[in-house]
Length: 481
Image 1 (cartoon, rainbow, N blue to C red):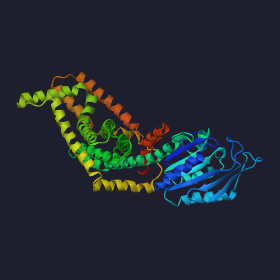
Image 2 (image 1 turned 180 degrees about the horizontal axis):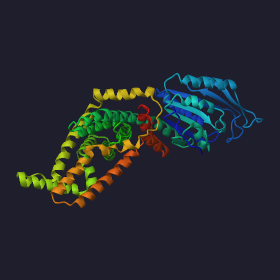
Image 3 (image 1 turned 180 degrees about the vertical axis):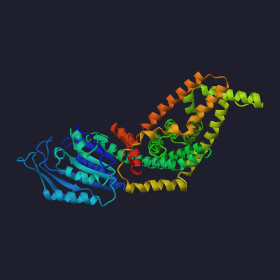
Image 4 (image 1 turned 135 degrees about the horizontal axis):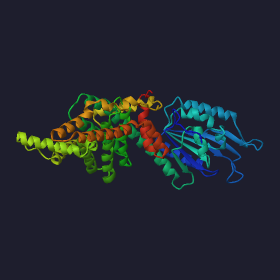
């Protein structure tokens, strides 16, 4: 099969309803359209009405088309055994269909678009296939296509992408699965919206606070991330999906001018795992939100030390004990032990973040400042563009080594160990370990390609997270190579 790349632009969610002739594909699409119309949603598309069939597993003598929302029926294909394939397509109907497709481009993107059906004619570039580029350019949200059995693989290269879902028309739960996919689409785009807004706050406000060396910046930003997860997760059918909000935020952080910084990206990702894990384990309630907020705050307090421990190992603890012993001997001050000091520091952050998380839960909606950021994020949907791969020069990916803050823990611990009688050989191995672990972190972060995340997730069947990620990325200005 030829390589498949996502069209630009195109549908956000592409579903195939598969089955042979007479498998009730048209009836299923009609039921889905009727259900969505009854809920007040706009539906566009074409239904194929089959005439008499010579045999249950053969094509009909003729086909008529009906535009959804219209009583107009148009003759589409008439069986003619002298042709190969044995159908003649009405030229006038083809003209009317193109007019309809071009008219869609003048309207807002349709929430649901159904096409009935894609068969061997479409594989050969006939039938409805010539309309696909025009239809895809309207950026429909959910597209459901009736596809003859065995033709999915052949159609995907022509459509320019893989189907996100393939549902057999004769499956007992086919209609509920289609309806659920439409509902899930709304939830995943909501998560993409909040993830994009959270990423925008991190890239702008967070970067400014970090640059200004404002105290407790990590606590402030982690609390904002927790609040965003509360607002995004309220009302979700599966609250555990909220874990993707910080993943999206971290992905956008990778596209920022400071995207190569290791600590912020690790912090954002861990916040999502901790908060989402709490919600997944305990459900969506005040207890899980309070625990999730507390864990987010505690991680904000300890992440720096955790990373330093990974790079410096037990020498960091040894240096601290040496420093505390020196203070106690020369100043007559009894310093608290490391576990007590870290525990108190983490508890302070946990209490603050927990309080802000519960405040967000009590407010139910973001305060004015955050609401404005979310509305600005939503306003970009109307002008979204295709997502271009983002390439960062290798020299800029490793610029973490140029920050003096990066080397400060190593220099501090080395100085204390030397003052306490440590050898230069031990310092050499400490430096080697520090640089080796740092290089591993840098290499992992340098490989972060948010656009590829979306592609890989979609390729492995995780269309929801892929949709949330790609929708957030599509609202960012196109990255330049």
